[in-house]
Length: 108
Image (tube, rainbow, N blue to C red; front, side, top):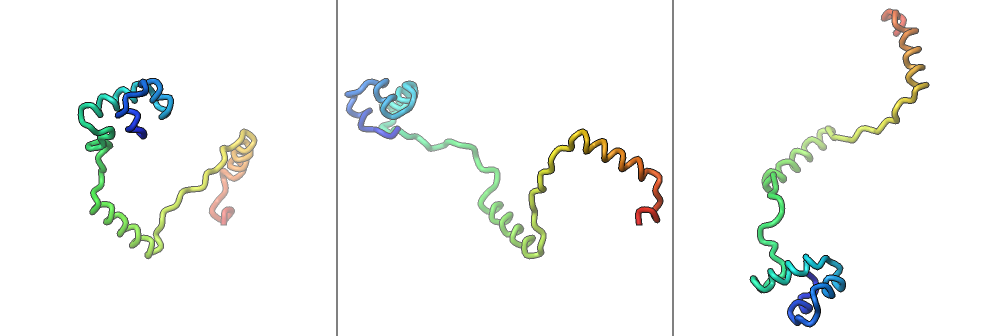
């Protein structure tokens, strides 16, 4: 909650505070209740998903990325190709059928 002063004064109702701050009335009520219990509005102590990689793992990955880049091995995203239309597919089938019985000499 941004305006702790509104909660401390008790001069405004929860609905008025919700409209002023731009949150729901339930959010104001929950923050008010938490403030009365803990004397703090924001309790960010143990929230969020735990990271899967430690700092050491991240630095190792960064190191290997640099090593591969020096050797010229880099990853890239493939270019998106448009879907083939019906006419493209028929042309492709016709092209394939014409060359079905070609030998290696014909291809070379």
